[in-house]
Image 1: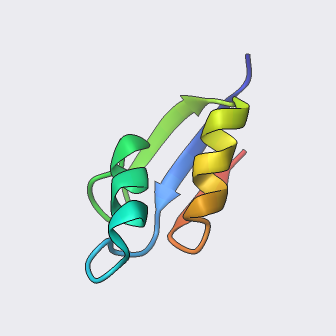
Image 2: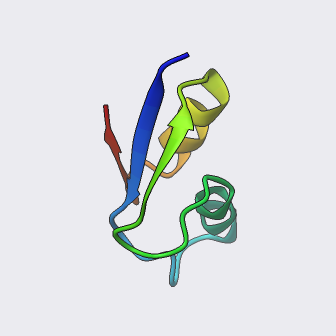
Amino acid sequence: MAKIKIKLVKSKIGKVEAHRKTVEALGLRKVGQVVEKEDTPQIRGMIQKVNHMVEVIE
């Protein structure tokens, strides 16, 4: 499967709890951190939920 890189560009502070937990489930902890994940529908759904906080690097 293809891999995608996900970067946290906005802080989790002050955000809705569900969004904070989604960002943590993606493996992102610090602003500017980049993680590489498999490109699956589940990961894409998580990215869509917090698309205002993350950036996808294809």
